Image (cartoon, rainbow, N blue to C red; front, side):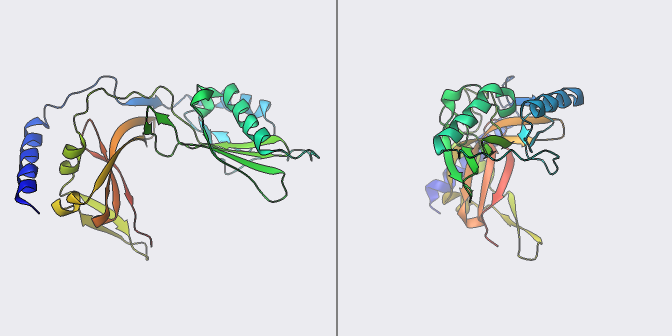
Length: 258
């Protein structure tokens, strides 16, 4: 490691130690979605099942489209007219336009389709949206999959998040976020399922890269939408997500292939 980089790390560590108790608090951050009442969710589910009698997916406790492990519905009747790719996309858009709350997509103009494909036999079509973006920042894991059979929707799984707020001022820029995770541990699982840990070192940070992303953090009663630096640290085979306002690690993904 160069002496210049070592001095830079020392300077930032000193700066962070002075500022960590004086971080700017944005009252509008993070965007938060709260769990709906059981009565509200039941009403939304009933309304959806009445409109789409062949639907096998459901809504979660936040009112978003969600997969279901159980269903008791009829299969759509056979249809001699097989859907085309264009028709299946239009069906997905029609569902979205009628159910912005359930999909989280309020403006169809923001939507782009990631992939469309037909399952064997030509009666099943899958339409998958791209990840949501706020300005140019991608929202992690927000693709929505629609499944159509014989011209009828049978499942909608996934959602976007409306009205995501992006702070105008970050407490942690890329450099500060990287330095703030030096000494932190990341976890992996070996082929036997046992957990082990690795420590992020200064040299590992030198070889890391970072991109701005948006992450949803779900707890028992709410979903928080946080802006984070996704720091890829190849030396410890991990992607580490650092909140731009708190500097805390809010998510970690192992890139080890076991």
